[in-house]
Structure formats: C-alpha cells, structure tokens
Length: 144
Image 1 (cartoon, rainbow, N blue to C red):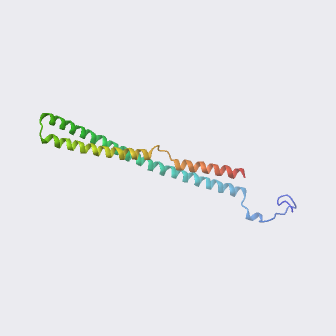
Image 2: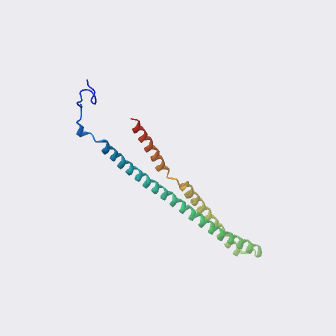
Image 3: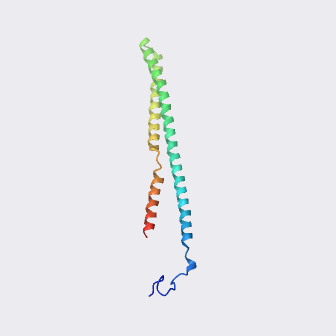
C-alpha cells in the first residue's frame, strides 16, 4: 500500500477537486466563528433582558409594599389614637383597615422578593456555559 501523499505521487480516494482548499476552510471557519459569536451575544442579551425585567418587577413590587406599609402605619397610628381617645367602634374600623393593608404589604413583599431572587445575579449563565462549551469544542478540533 502506498502513502497517498508521498508514495508514487498519485492520490487515492477522492480527487483533489473534492477537497476544499486551506483558504476555503479558513473562510468557513471565520464565517462559522462570526455566526457563533453573534448567536452567543444574542443569547446573552436575551438572557440579561429577561433577568433585568424580573429585577424591575420585583423592585416595583417592593416599592409598592413600602408605600402601602406607610399608609398602613398611618392607619394603625390613627386607630391607636382613636382607640385611646374613645372606646367605641370608629377605632375598630381604622384598625381593620390597617391590618388589611399590612396583609397586602406582606403579600407584595413576598412576591417582590421572589421576583428579585429569580432575576439575580443578572449574569447570562446560559450564554457563558455555551461559550465555554464552544471553546472546549474548538480546542478539541485543533488537537486533531
């Protein structure tokens, strides 16, 4: 058996026209690398946008909880003042309103904290993992 590159000078298997040139291969590599980088950047942008949206919603809910808690405290203070001034039904109405507002504050705070936790840290984890995988595959390909 002769070596296809050295032996008698004749190539075995596919003809020379079937194989791409080094320039063509390099062009393909450049094109694929460019596409891969653009796809990874798009993935990172999408991932960051989703996480930042969750952070924004969570922050908004926490702000709403803070504002409502101020109203609730005001009502509770009003209820305490009216309760001490008179031992009649008006203070009970203020107290009920204050407690209901505090329950709403608790619900908003819990939902907001959960939304913040879901969006943090705002790091494109999937894109980073994909880039690491791509780098490993490229290294494996270069070793061959």
